[in-house]
Length: 431
Image 1 (spheres, rainbow, N blue to C red):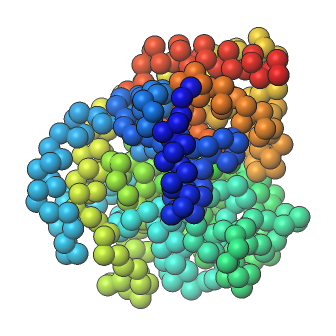
Image 2 (tube, rainbow, N blue to C red):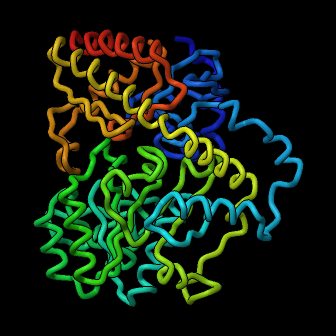
């Protein structure tokens, strides 16, 4: 496969951008190759600078749920742009968007728009502390909630521990109030609350973890989490930046039948534009300035172009909720095809699926937490990624990310992908 133009752009990029990219996973370091630079997308396909076409299973890490350059979504965007891009003043579409989100996600009564998932989770935690007048936050190892200082932590050797920074530039005193528990571990959760519960302002969790590969939470675990946070008057925050309006219209809250106190959103609610949001019960959200004493602001928050596209995206999904059933059926087809290939070839790998998201782990499951996924062979995944790339399949350039389907994927796409998967698995088995 010819990637000369991508290599040329990358060589130029590293002169001016750290690592040549604006987000680490795009550097393709985890798969031991140079990044592929994309020039356009249409339907289920993306095309790189060299003109190579790929079936896309990244889908912009989730937002391209209707596929790339969806005609219904894109129609009229020129008229919106002509009216202006940013005012720094309120617009009606912000209210329309907030109303739609509140109506679509029953756990929240009010919502505040921001510009990224990181802003959403950071702000939600500040609100939780302001509302409860407590200091500590619980997160789970392997869950990623953006790059704000207090959340860039991991656990130590013990099951109950204060966080240790996982990034240079994050002082230990910043994360001293962040406690890290093991995902899907009720015992660990209870012990943490028994020790620190009186000062735990809230618990933030990806109800379907998508940043250590795909690791869904057990329903019993989430039910216990909901119970214990109520018992200790701590807020339960669902990070639905990935799952909100992606795995189902009502997100993980609807799928699991559990209502958090607050929820964070991103990805799909921008229709492809940078956006984030956090919402919660009325009495909690009234803590936010200008009503309350928790300050948060942003010049581009509620940007009218992003709101128009996000609103349109959600309305299309609202009118066509069968898209979720269709995508899940496609994901099941992939899951079964890949599982059969794994069995026939006899390679050490496990395909995990939840609704319309998947991860192919190069290791033996089950995968219930961060420790489990760390046993996977990332070197084998790197070889697999390159084999699939050479066959025109764009997968996440890292073992610990998820594959996403879109409404634009076709039966032919799936058949070709399963065939390519078989050939790629066979090739790496023979290496």
